[in-house]
Image (cartoon, rainbow, N blue to C red; front, side, top):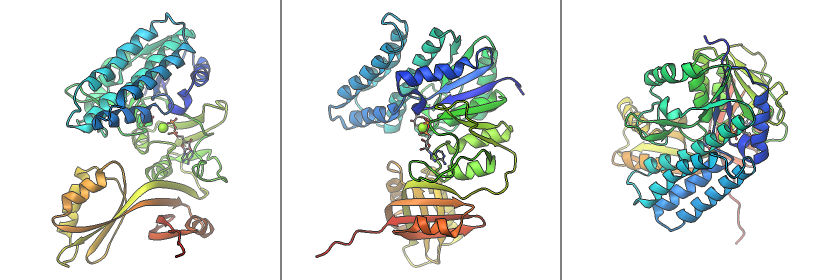
Length: 430
Ligand code: ADP
Ligand code: ASP
Ligand code: MG
């Protein structure tokens, strides 16, 4: 194990303005002289803005150039708050941004997801160029690393799966020699490359996962993700008032919570860390001295109820067309198609002739999936649902969560309750 290396990840919220970037610089001053790999994601809501450009280009609705201009303007404005006009960062930025110009000049590619990755990945490139230049300017020597030279994925755009063997080899060859107490290494989250050198992305919010990939491949001592919350809380503070911070969390608890929608950590982050027993700290960039949450192998007793909410859920009721039982061979076929469509199944249940699954209703996946099985099965879809998972539940909390909702599916396994909920439709008078 590389006893001294730490990995830090700064997400969009920690890089959303000139002041935020200065704050990150301040946090990193305390790390001077230590071996550190820094992973940054795109600034603020950049990824959403770039997604709109992709959409506009695909639709050829004429809006893409204006959206791109607005993005460039905002980026340069931030830079002018950090650097002198003559700083070389502007040249590097233009080189990164021109990639989008090139895509927009072409007719839309037949593969939407491919274009998505080529455009959206620029957000991470831009952010890493700016933060790299800023740290060096602040007397924090930092080396810039292209994550695409390290993280190899398959060629499923927007949801690349890491090819671990090659990624490990690249990390050994390229990154390990860069690790030093003299200079940090700074790279991008979220992005990777195919074996043909096309940029891929790892799925929305994937930068936490990137940091875990680097931590794993480099045998880091610990990994820290810097967030706008004091640590992992008992529920999302955007949805609930009475939440409290968890000081300690086991990997097991963290993976369960994040898989079912606790948005504070990307669910894929935990496995690589657990496999090498690398602790994960979730800390606040607003209060860097705060204790945060420490996630490790340590078993923790007596958790309070933990609530995770996953919105945009769809419930699919899949039944045989000829009233035959949903038998094993049907299941095996359905799961094959589910896997091909990379649908995330959050809950499932079957009766004699109906198999129900609750899945994330993202992009066009549900429609594509049901189209693929329609020949053989009848599919009824309920959309706009919410999946609530409560670990270490108490009846009182369940009642509160269910209030004014219709429960479409509920399941209790040991300490966990899951409920698929629908808003009660408002009754209109005649
Ligand atoms: P990043 O800046 O790294 O992209 P995110 O916005 O993805 O950070 O994650 C932080 C957000 O996660 C918080 O602002 C909070 O609203 C949300 N969140 C959801 N569930 C939890 C939870 N259980 N504990 C803390 N934060 C949570
Ligand atoms: N920038 C990407 C996103 O917004 C990745 C990340 O922030 O983790 O999804
Ligand atoms: Mg995020």
